[in-house]
Length: 95
Image 1 (tube, rainbow, N blue to C red):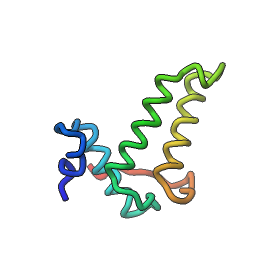
Image 2: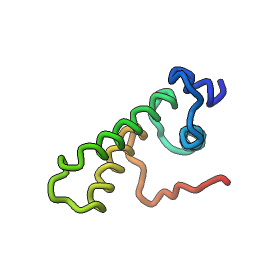
Image 3: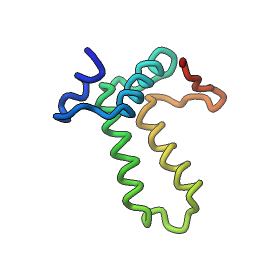
Image 4: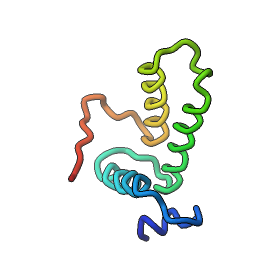
């Protein structure tokens, strides 16, 4: 199924950034323990986490921006991967 059709439920043509992320999920699945969830569903979950965190800045309390970003990334990685990925692992681009 094409990447564009995977997002057809949105009722509009997906953003190019969405397509880039969906392609990246497919690449990550080849090497890393990505959850067994449809790519479009993973994208929706991750975008929801980031969007909500951006809207609810006050929920972080007095933490600086770097700490907030680190926390958001930790949560996103917990959603994306079904088991811990060693920190020494390098995510390389296949450009």
